[in-house]
Length: 165
Image (cartoon, rainbow, N blue to C red; front, side):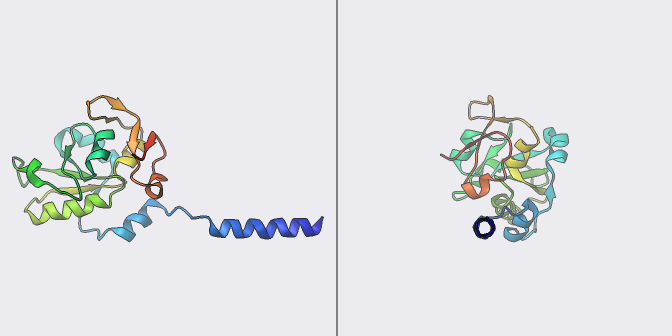
């Protein structure tokens, strides 16, 4: 019996060692971001949402599954600044993506173009949905579906229905 317990304990130890550990969100953002753009929290954005321009920096298929209401699509790989041509360079802008990594890249590009009041949504649309805040599909109707980007990033989406295609 003792031998079985020892073997089981050893097996369990090795299984735990090879399982990927989920890094806390702040560690992921610290790892991938340069922190050149200030963050805004989901809570703060929800309070001032009517007074900001929201920019979705995810890919088109992600945006079409769902996005924060009234967000402008600009893309990431094929970033198009044209959507902002009529927006004042001093207007408060919040850029978001899934978690806050791609959005920092796009926010830096906006800063280089002369936009001065730019924020990166901490935790992105995942954190927005995790706080039970509404998102809409490409018809403007409220939905629970969120494009999870990848299995690796999808672990940070705790609420809603994950979509990978």
